[in-house]
Structure formats: structure tokens, C-alpha cells
Length: 524
Length: 51
Image (tube, rainbow over all chains, first blue to last red; front, side):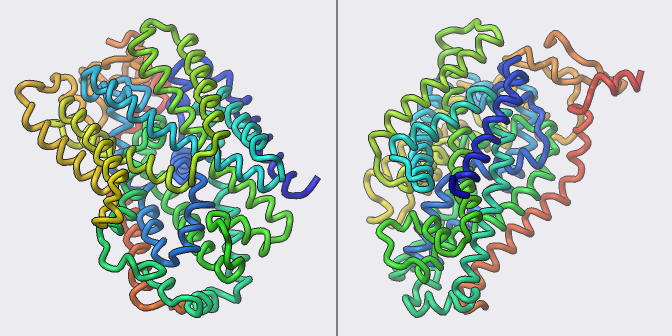
């Protein structure tokens, strides 16, 4: 057995063990399966958030972009560096508190609770399902490709193995397995990326020598304006490149669900330090390695393979194994979260909400698990068909998600006038805007990034429609009170009612007028 | 710096410093958030202590 393969098998065994270890704890309730019992601390919250956000794109698309466009690619890195802290500072504490007050246990259910109308879930769930399915498809395909490259397995067999492993621990352990494995995966990812960066810089004779080598090939590679200088003045494209990862994550249900699973709302503070620390080490490295690849593995047919090809050249075999495990970790940490959220939306937000309303906790967990199985099998089928370029699919799906959901999630906790018609208009305008801009090729013809188009439309829509419908669709007083309470930093007063999922009220301690804590058991 | 054009160095350095600064300002300006911790930490045990 090769050393690379041994590393991979060790990694696979670790994530499956996590799934088995937490499966009993996750099976007790829906909240346990979908939110890990809201028990996660700062390191796991932050590194799960980052490993979930990063995806296989960082080892493939990011390196490929650096390889092709040089320092222009760093616009994406500059946005991505702040993605974690932006998400935690804007949404973290407030979303944790509001979801707790409203008893929300899924990221789409949270939207319906905040914007009380079944139509909100009817609009949100299909948009999320559509985008996340394409996103998960890209990750599953990347997982198969990565495994095939490392092991030499036929791609179809590698796809089945990679998807099978993700399915095992997600199926067994639910959110807790996804979170703990995400934590482990983040550590493997950063170790692998930093190791390959150090080896790459060393291989080219240092960073300055590397830059001089790139300048000798094409001086434009060291500018922020593209290999041909084609992005000079293209601020629509550049702002979109920065925004997509800086604020796009606030609209990704598989990422924002992490806020709802924090043990305490203040966890967001410490988590921001972990998130930014991880990002500084991990993100610029990917693009820089890709650029320096031009000096090490020139003339690649597929630039997305740059980092993998570089690893084979600059690292000893045992380190290649770690890097390959890191690549699989990046892919799997996103794929498992997407798979869990896609299954959750289908099971809880569609089946449980509209078709089979009175499931008990254990039945609901079973439905979630089997829905995940079905989604994975559908994903495998599509992956075997081989849709085109991973990068395009991921960017497209993330653009739609970000455009459709960022204003809805942000306004949910920051603007009490945001109401159901505004949220629905925003989600539709964002999704249609991003898809339309992509199909019309606005980035090429007008220099406008699809996400920029989508997010401007969705933001305008939620503001205009909410204001126009304040009289016809006022928010219920208890929601207004919950949002106002979320804005305040203080202990939760006992008069606030728990809304939809009364089972969650047992979590929330109450404080009476004398400050004596009372633990509610009946949801009243 | 490191063989990069000045413009690239300034954009990259400025971007990194901005996010590091944002993170530190956020961290140190939200110390009050711990006021809410009591609502989530081991409520039953604390209730017994107070009683």
C-alpha cells in the first residue's frame, strides 16, 4: 500500500468513526440530528463554518484561477478572508438568539418563522434545493475526481466510494458528525495547504524569486487586473469577485445553520478569531500556489489540477498523502453539510411541513436520514453523467444562493419592518436576477457579476416591498418583540413566547422579575 | 515588496490589514455579549445554586 493511500484510509476511518461515535446522541431528537443539540463551542463552530464554506474549489478552482490569471485571483481571496468574521459578526449572535426565541431548527424553517407565511417556505425551499443540489453535485464530482487521482481508481468507482463514505457518517451522525468532522477536516486542510505552500515557495527559490519568474512569463500576472489586463476598470466584475465570498456565505443555508447550533450566542466572538486565523493561513495560499505552479508545472491542460500536480513535484510521498487527504477533506466538508441541508430541507421543510405534519421525533430523524440517502443517490446518478466544469457550477450555485438569501437572513435580525411579502420578493428577485445575468452573459457584455446583479435586486426588493406592504401584511407582535429582543444584549425576559417548535422551549431557561431562573418544561 | 508591483502590494496588504482590524474591533467591542451566556449555560444547576 502506498503512503498516500494509507493517509487517505486513515482519514476516511476517522470521519466514519466520528459518525458512529455520535450516532446515538444524534438519533434522540430532530434537534439533535439537525443542530447537534445546539451544543457547539467556538473552535468547532468557526472551523466547521470555514471548512464548509471553502469546498473543493480551494484546491481546484482557486489554484486554477491563480494559474491562469495571476494576482487577479486574489480579489476572490481578499473577499473570502473576511467571509467568516462578516458572517459571525452580522448574523452569529442575533441568528442564534432569534432562532432560539422562535424555536427554529432548520435554516429554511427559521425564515418561515421570522416571516410568518407558508409561502416563504414554499419559495425558499425550492430555491435552496435547486442551488444546493448543483453545489453538492459539484462537490461529489470533485470528490470522485480527487479520489480517482490519488488511488488510480476508475472515476465511476471513485465516485461511488467517495459518496458512500460521505453518506455513511452524515447518515449516522447528522449535524454533530458533520460539525466534528468539519473541525477535523479544517485542521487537515490548513496543514496540507501550508505544507504545500512552504514546499512550493522553497522549490522556486523563495517568494521574490517566484514573483520574478512569473514576471518573466507575463508581467500582468503580478497585477490585480488579469493576465491580459482585461479586468482593469471592470469594477462590476471585481466587486462581484470580492462579494461572492465576503458576504455570499450569509445566504448559504448550509453555512448559516451553524449559527443556530452554537452553544451560546456569544460563541460568535471567539469563533471570529478562529475563522480569520484559519482564513489568513489557508485562503491566499491556494491562489499563490496556483500562480507559482506556472514555474513548476507549465502548460497544464487542466489548470484546476495545478495544486495536485504541484504536490507530486514538490512534496515527499508521505506529505503528498496528507495533501491528498486535505483535498478530500475540503471537498467532503462541504459535501456533507450540503447533503445534510438538502436532505433536511426536503424532509423537514417540505415533507414534514406540508405532507406529513405530525411525525414524532424519532420518525422525523428517520425521514431526514432516508431523505439524505435519496439525495445522495440522485447526486451519484448525476455525477456519473459528468456535468461540465466544477468551478462554473459552484460559482453559479453560490451566486444564486447568496443573491436569494443574503437580504432575507440579514434583514431577519436587523430590520423589524422586513415582512413576508418583502422576503418572498427578495428571494425571487435575487434568484431570477442571478440566473438571468448568468444566462444573458452580463459579466462578458456589461462587466456585471451575476451575484452583484442578484444581490442588488434582492436588496431593493425586500426594502421596497416590505415598506409597501406594512399595512396589508404587518408582522405579528410576538415576532416584532422577538426581533427587538434580539437587538438587545441582555438576558431573555420570561414573558417572551416560544413560537413554533415547542419542544425547544425546554432548552430555554427563563428569568423572572427577581432574576430567579426557571426552566420551562411545557413551552409556555 | 517580494518582487510585487507597489499597487499590488498596497491592495493585498490593505485587504489583509482591513480584515485583521475588523476582526479585532469586532472581538473587543462585543465583550458585553457574555451577559447573555447565563441564558444558555447549565440553567438547572444555576437555578439550584440561586435557590
